[in-house]
Image 1 (cartoon, rainbow, N blue to C red):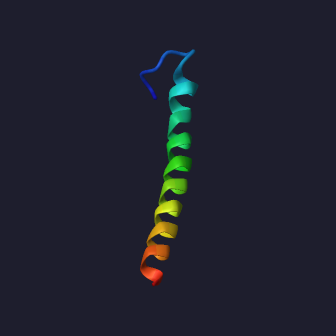
Image 2: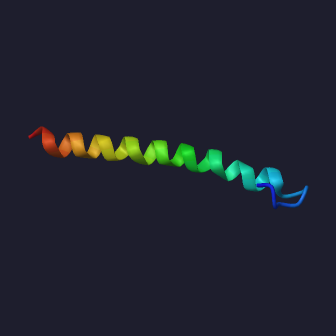
Length: 40
C-alpha cells in the first residue's frame, strides 16, 4: 500500500487481513461440504 495517502494507507492494508480471514472461512466450509458429500 505504498501508493495510498497517509489517511487511507492503513485502511487499504487491512483488506489483506480481511480477505485472508474470509478465505480461511470459505475454504473450511468447502471442506466440510465436500466431506459431507463424499461421506455416503
